[in-house]
Figure 1 (cartoon, rainbow, N blue to C red):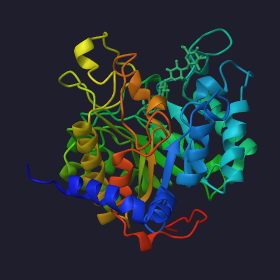
Figure 2: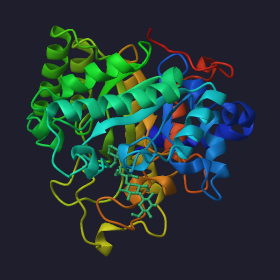
Figure 3: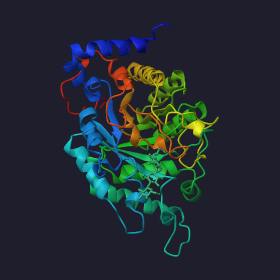
Figure 4: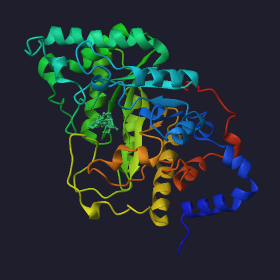
Amino acid sequence: MKATPIAILLCFYLLSAVADEEETHLRTLKQAFHDDFLIGAAIEKLLFEEGARPTLKLVPTQFNSISSCNMLKWSPFNPKPEVYDHRAADAYVAFGTKHNMYVVGHVLFWHNQTPEWVFRDVDSKQLDRSALLERMRERVRLLATRYGSKIEAWDVVNEAIEGNGHLRNSTWTQIIGKDFIEQAFRIAHDELPTDVELLYNDYSMTGPKKRDAVVRMILELKQRGVRIDGVGMQGHWSINGPALADIEASIVAFSQAGVEVHITELDIDVLPRQPGMHGADVAKQLEQDEAMDPYRDGLQAEMQQRLAQRYADIFQLFLKHREKIKRVAFWGTTDNHSWLNNWPIKGRTSYPLLFDRNGAPKPAFHAVIGLKAPEDAADDPAPTVIHD
Ligand code: G3I
């Protein structure tokens, strides 16, 4: 059997592990990619979960950026009028500040996890445009007052453009109109410190229709004098797709539109999916099916190797376009904390990240780290904003 590059790499790693265990062992993701892009992870309520210590320890060791997953979304943070639960968000921001990390706020405005009361007045009548815009402004003003520049970038709007390139027909656009995205970015610019970066975030950004619609949206915002600093390509990809050429086309297109590219929610799903089941629309849920959960008892070496190769290919592409990419962030830290164990089918066992359920680096981790020569690794660096 022909030895694949990844097999050679893995053999090299195993053989050299003894010789330079100290060297290999010490190299972390943030050291390896220090001069290329920020490297991050979404941390859920790790700060509070029992038994999460091994995973939490990973975060400042391996990463120089964090994303907030659920805790800053409208529902968890402000479930009812005048009712706030900011304990998790406060701990998240304090953790990132303590470890001198690039802290990202996810998400100001999204069609999911926004309580119905946001769109209603005290008599449960639907708000009009100006009233909803004012309520949006209140949310951002409160977050700006509480966190200021400690949150260095916000996903201002999430998933507002459909795969066919049309604006999503959400309650936001039904009430505000087709300039919802523009108004959201205007409010974020007005209320947040000017050094806080404003991002548009979405999934399936490698599809040509969505890619072109997002480029048009960026150019229109710029033409209207509305600040947008970056685009988040979520990166919920699978072992089989999207093609590297499609990922590359989007990185280049968004960069040419004049914004920084962030890979915001990277994970590579190894589990089978029904035809047409891609993207990350959380509203989609499918029935349990044993055949769709083939790795309940562990991931075979062959699939580990395929996952390692897929991650190596994707990171090779990121390195090729390192000057366009500000950040690469994973949607979770260890496999057991991945949303993909429950989407699109609840209760499956997925293996989408670089660290296994015990927090140990997987072959995919070594394949990614192995793309950078040891001497490239910086000493224990503070996070650098690579592209001013
Ligand atoms: O915290 C409550 C808990 O108190 C309650 O008992 C439990 C049962 O309903 O729900 C818990 O909240 C869940 C939350 O995750 C925290 O675990 C919500 O129901 C559940 O809907 C929520 O799912 C999140 C999903 O977004 C929907 O908001 C996933 O964790 C999160 O990974 C996923 O992340 C999204 C990004 O925000 C946007 N891009 C796609 C990505 C994946 O769908």
